[in-house]
Amino acid sequence: MDILEILDKKRTNQKLTKEEINYFVDGYVKGSIADYQASAMTMAICINGLKDEETIYLTDAMIRSGDIMDLSKIKGIKVDKHSTGGVSDTTSIALVPLLACEGLKVAKMSGRGLGHTGGTLDKLEVFTGIKLEQPQDKIIDIVNQVGCVILSQTANLVPADKKLYALRDVTSTVQSIPLIASSVMSKKIASNNDVIVLDIKVGEGAFMKTLEDARHLASLCITIGKAYNKKVSAVITDMNTPLGKSVGCELETNDAINLLKGQKSNLSDIVFVLFKQILKLANINCDYQAEFDRLIQSGEGLQKLKEMVVALNGSTDFFDKELKPAYVYRAKNDGYIYDIKPKELGILVNNLGGGRKNIQDTIDLSVGIRLIKQKGDKVTKGEIIAELYSIQEKDLNNTYKELDNIILLSDTKPTLAPLILDIIE
Image (tube, rainbow, N blue to C red; front, side, top):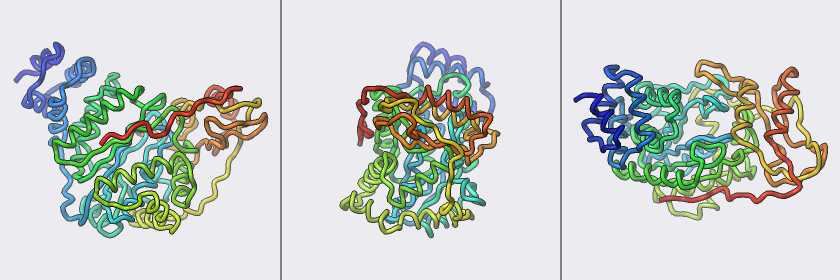
């Protein structure tokens, strides 16, 4: 088999066989296929796409490039949730303990942030001493005892995805729907869960810019899941404004904790929908809203999160930490909050030290911005719109100028899009 013949087939939009896709993935992981040849392949896929059958072949080859987690010693239904990424998205930290309270088992592999603000693992590092890399036998012990764990992807889980994603990131081929679907589902299937619910973001602050593309991605991921006898559904959610009230690791984790303490917000609305979808697929029938409210009002969800943190050697001091802003941002005039640009807000916090540009960068977990007002709110001149945390004085003037272009005021109240745009089952 010849990589040049395979590249020529995909360049001319011909269907690749399972053997050809296996040859490509195996060769790239082992180094016999060069980066420039792999980038030619990903660009051809980005331009010409893949048939569903080809995408399943690609997903399978990526799964088999490394280890498949053996979770057979975990007693119960194993569930997982994946978000395609967004600004101020802390759903996992609140959702995972709530699922464990229902007797479901969650061994969730998460990642770190790059380009915007911190990822889920970065946010969990607000718990001093937490160890997010654990051997498989320890993972199984924690899940059997506590019911849930969120931690770093094991070293040899889907190495093909790690290598291909790094290549796609520097060759402008990240946004290919077949490549996104195979990347997401290869990790989820290799993690060996029974139920998978996807939170697919769409809008200005997301990879998917249109509802049509988001639905396409959702349907493709479900098709892949069915090929492996997995129960999969997708919730398509709006990302034209930040999901939560805060951007920055400490603030976002604090928002998740406040949700488990009973604070209502857009974040809690999405966490409930994901909670309901996972329980439905796991064949748990109940009054979902009443059960969700009970777990929060009783404090069970919050206690379960503490148990998970302790099981990972983390301190619980952060649960009682009082976060105080250094500065505030005020409205320049009367009006309505007409828009809050999520991508630009994430980049601003990143540039202030609350995210990383390179994977080796260190995040200042305390840096962040909390939105006191949300899109659609009416404000008066001088009223506080946002609080700024751990911002250095030298960065203050530029931060205010950036916020003037991120948080837009108008005399007209905006029409708010629904938070949940579609559910595909």
